Length: 280
Length: 169
Image 1 (cartoon, rainbow over the protein chains, first blue to last red):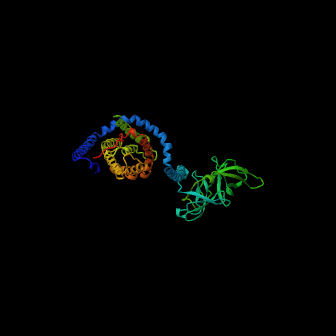
Image 2: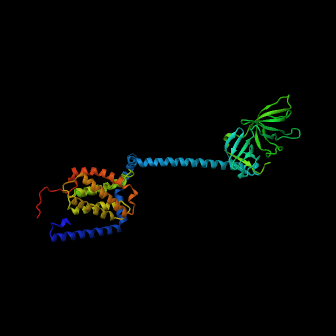
Image 3: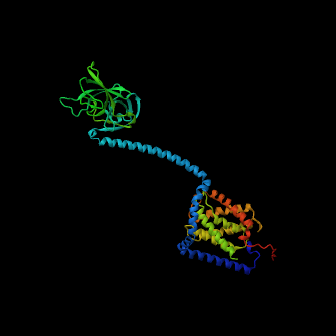
């Protein structure tokens, strides 16, 4: 080594001995200190902790602003990833909400004692192709056939299955102009003197329905509830339909009519139930 | 006579605390202890081995005390880097009182890289747990401050150089 070029042999050996002594001293120091590793570190942490704590508190104020300068690319990347994750989570939330809605509808109809003896197949409304017809996402593969009754979660009659495809089906609503249903006006106090009033519910198109062929001398009042009658072959009896909104009585005609407001609102309905064990 | 060593110990301790408690989450890892050690070595006389051993021992002990590893590896790393820097200065035949910024930055970047490498090997870390190039760059930017402090205030930390000509036999 060039350090030793101008040094005498005696001095050289002294330096070597000194270096050896220092090396042994260093190794001894490392060994001894590591025996008391915890105590040594604890001592240093103890004496420096007041200062460190203050520095740590100040750090959280500065690092947010200054650190962002150095982390701008990382922040941009993180922002992009978080936005994507947010969209993904939003999509999952919507999916979970739809599932929850379906479960709630199923629970609601199962809790209805009148629907206890029905075999039900739940379907979602996909769209409305024509006035008075809606498309659902169940078809022949799910056991659907024509003329199966369709109800909502409150056990209210909506319509019947009209056309069945492999995975889809069209449902004719009660408001469809081609729809006719034998109904009765609900009267809990019906007896031999005041027999139940029966009639025919016809669809008027555009979510309208009206009762026809009610005997002129029958007493029907506004806000009276109408249900399916036992004369009806397509639908089970006593299924709720709607209520009378106004009565049209003309003494010159043999029958009276009444407009009906349906209980179901197809615009806010997501799930329907097809009664699979009751069809003609 | 004792002011200088006490001052050096104080500054090492301060830099260690700054590194551990203040400069966290700033987007890079400032190595103040290493930069101070390197500056002391770079500007110190070449044959002052005792001083090199003293500050290697001091810097290494502090680094290990405030890390989760046992005490000792950093002392050896600093000793090795200290001797290597002195050899580099001798190899490039730089005058003892000549301290160019280019040499300072070049030797500093290389020694910092080896410091990261050796630390990672001893602490069983991945060298690329943090972006080494980015850290070296920002640390060298910080070291510029130290360079000018040492250049203009060298009497504070560095042994007094005698301007008297020495007769070599």
